[in-house]
Image 1: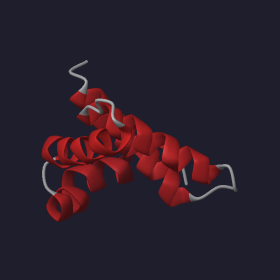
Image 2: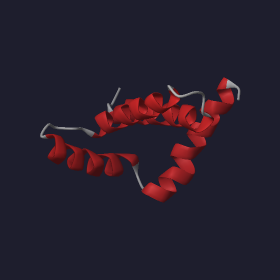
Image 3: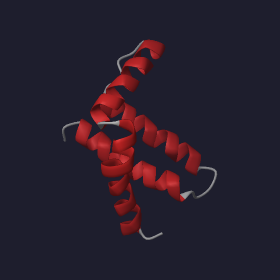
Length: 86
């Protein structure tokens, strides 16, 4: 898959199907962050959730190429940037 196709696919997922399935990213990642915070005993912000999901996908990529994980890393990175207000 070409790089622009990976980015296009990630864009269409985070602004389409995934958003429709899971709701707004901030609300979803805030809920996940609260649960992780309670479990870990440290504050986990919505942008931290996005960044840690990138790491999860990268860990999976260690076992070999997988288009879905590569696409997801791009999507989570974009959401993390947006949620960081950068």
